[in-house]
Length: 422
Ligand SMILES: Cc1ncc(COP(=O)(O)O)c(C=O)c1O
Image 1 (cartoon, rainbow, N blue to C red):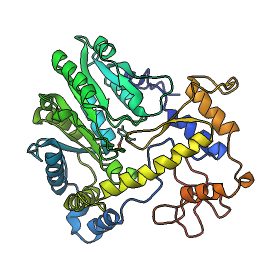
Image 2 (image 1 turned 180 degrees about the horizontal axis):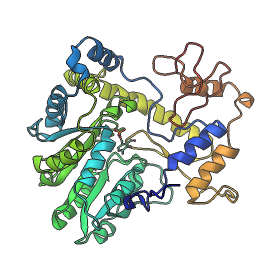
Image 3 (image 1 turned 120 degrees about the vertical axis):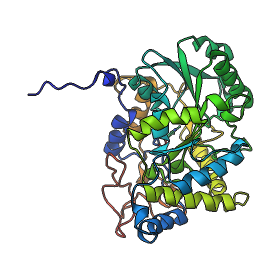
Image 4 (image 1 turned 60 degrees about the horizontal axis):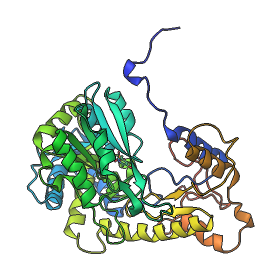
């Protein structure tokens, strides 16, 4: 038996929440809405563009492209975000295309955090920030958003406490990760909250990593504000985006960072020694997709806008169903997650494993509160239809007996329907 051991940088890594809960969802046949991906198809045009890029755009479209990003993609990204940031963005030095926003987050942290540096993470947060900080040898400092009232109904009721945030800053702080709209809460940060963060970043001279993957998904007239647009923040902000989120095509795993050349250059060093370049045809298809959406950006047909309308309607339905299930939803201002309060639930959770109360509560829900579809009346049929059809009314994850199909650990269905499609 070999004595090979994992590198020290792997020690102390928290386990992934998904390992347990995907398996449990499969085992209990629960519908897993927890993971951040839609159950409907991406726009037809980008799928056609991908086919066209691989089959009919010349052989070079299937070969390596420019390391920092395919020229057509970085061009449209710089034009599009040039409008959002109200400045000219150099596509060659201020944009870096990565494998998903995940790749950008990894580069941003790995290329700036030294062992012992502290990185502030505003909680609740996307689950990769902490492990990546640890991987870089850094120390995560968590600062929670806190509910401003007991009976929170909207994510706007969650606030960032200025004094608590400032208390986490010190000369050891290297960076802060801000995610608005926030995963999982759905909170959209106000100008005052971003300004509080920005003032501290400038005071302590630190890097701001602004994860904006849900940039277009804001509801109720809320506006997504961009950290790099705050006074004097450009020079210290890396803004991170995701084509997977923009186009509801999370499996494409394409993202990009935008920032000043001195920060993008650092990230580029990791990129070129890690993946070197991202898939050419995917970049081409995303570029064509962005060009189309930018040409119709002020119309309801623009995918950025139609996605928000579709998600908004689903948000209303989900809120209603959670209330009917005797849960208290916190209506999100943005993103595509919805959390429900459980502090008001008096449930005996002994016998539902170890760990935090929310873990136990979800185990309890999956194991004991599963819907018996057959015992439900007509109303449930609507829900079933809503869950089982995509926007083109194609069946999704249900089998011919109208039961959810089983999913494998990669969230692919184990069985396909009779038409061999999802
Ligand atoms: C807040 C946040 N950032 C980054 C990502 C990763 O995005 P991508 O799939 O483009 O890597 C996700 C995915 O769920 C996310 O929710």
